[in-house]
Image (cartoon, rainbow, N blue to C red; front, side):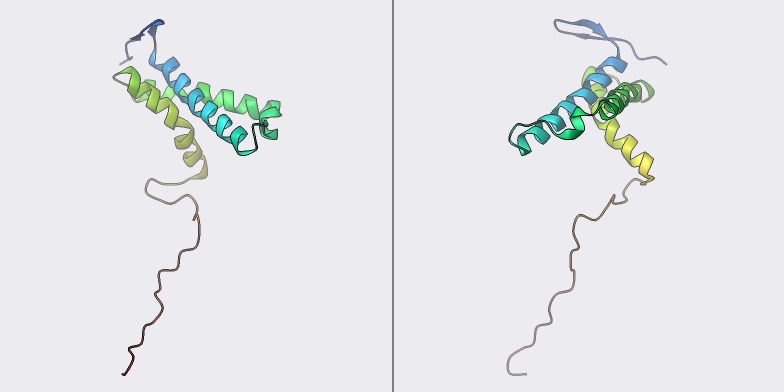
Length: 120
């Protein structure tokens, strides 16, 4: 069943595919802003490479299919599905199953140092 187009203020009817693409592009814009702000406003080298930009654009276009496949019921759901699609596709590419950690962030020691009582 195809999802009906959504009506957005000032824009009109927009299909869930394009709302998903917009969600994915919004996440990419946020990541670019964060990367630039981490190096004093300069553009990171990866954003100057054409293959990287093409790959991210293709990923955004592919991300638009997720709201369609999942039959998003409203524009907010379509936006969220599009925004989460890069993470979902990245985990699928790595072969990570739901609930499985991608990579350990840091080694955490779960053993507590042994305590000895004074006077025993």
